[in-house]
Image (tube, rainbow, N blue to C red; front, side):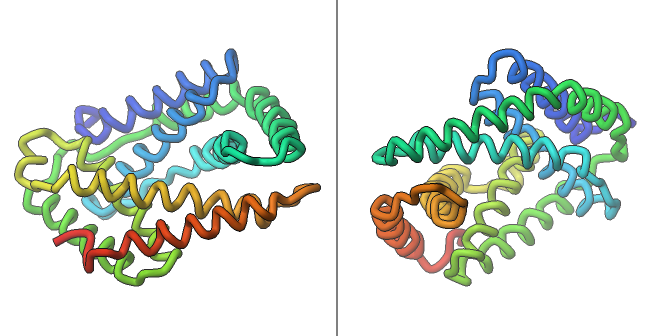
Length: 244
């Protein structure tokens, strides 16, 4: 039962989350937050894939808290590394980051125990679905992603980004023979992911700096970001559809 390919990948990513949590509690390096969040995203994508294939619910509530808490810190780190921010704001961000880091590091032992217990309880059906079923899954997901893109609004574009990231996480977990039969245009999708990701980074920065409480809001900087975001957003719709 535990020889299922999806189980193999899910288990490895859960182990990796535990590893990066332990490393982060010792050295506080941002790369461990980035990598553990990536592991969580992949695990969630594979569980979602399994739900569709096997018509069974797979809860990932055990990963929610650490994902959210690490996400708060990563958001501050990304914003704090931006150029031309006022020094007072940078200091304020750093103070908040240090506070959240200490909180997370304090809770790491409990998170590791929780995730280890969750990992040991994971089971997936042993039979892997037929290639035709998986091909139909990808066709359906690409069709939904196209529709999100064609809405040409920011909410739809954000959903589109999440969907294609999930799709590529699943695709990269499949056997090479099966990937060849599905035949996704990886180069095109990865390029599109990068472009949408760059837009999303700008959009998220505006949201963060505009609506979080700060003693001093960088109004001029936010204005420049808004101009940049509009250009990035409009440039994404030069073609009618992302997937042909």
